[in-house]
Length: 228
Ligand code: ADE
Image 1 (tube, rainbow, N blue to C red):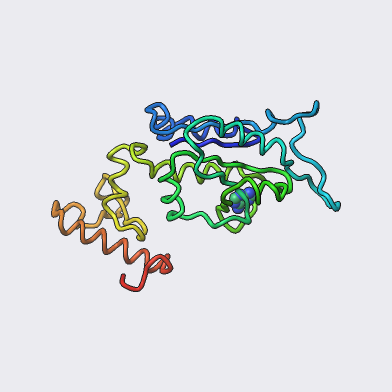
Image 2: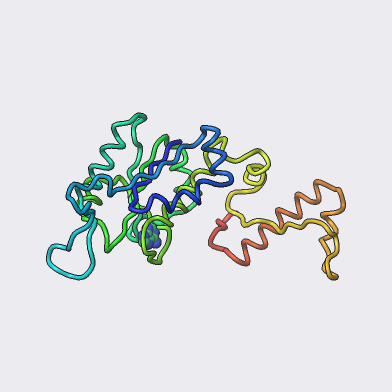
């Protein structure tokens, strides 16, 4: 999968995607993540990317021209871009289901905005979808873009190693994680549940499933459907 990020702050992404699992996935060629500076497509001598809003008001608005040109420049390269995604608090709420859909795609462009917002024509005539990471407002779309990329990337086959992806497979979809323990079996008088040291794999499997269900019922009953 290939993901392009359009941003005014490409350097913000280098730390996040330059380490750990996503770094390894890029080194292995499973994933390609590229951040491009929208300002590289500005045309005036001040390299402007924003301007005052028509009709007055405070703040600045991201201009059409640099954003359209940046997207069109990325579209020159193959494969074809599947979605052009704007990160904005007005977008569709991001969740695991949307992440799964996007993980099927070959190529995505994510546009992170700053200032007061985007010229509406970017929204209506360029973007194919808008995503919000939640009902709160950040200073820009970069952190939301990181969250979206990280969530999608770990669903792309080959990004997680077998040990990392095992957890995903071994548990039902809509449940919170069961409790985990590691050595020692007793720490400051706090014991590891006996079942986990029993060596009985079937009992352990049932206990974990039961714990995950209980925990989900207590903390996130909204995740359980009628049949659970
Ligand atoms: N930009 C600012 N706030 C945002 C949010 N909640 N989701 C996506 N992009 C944003």
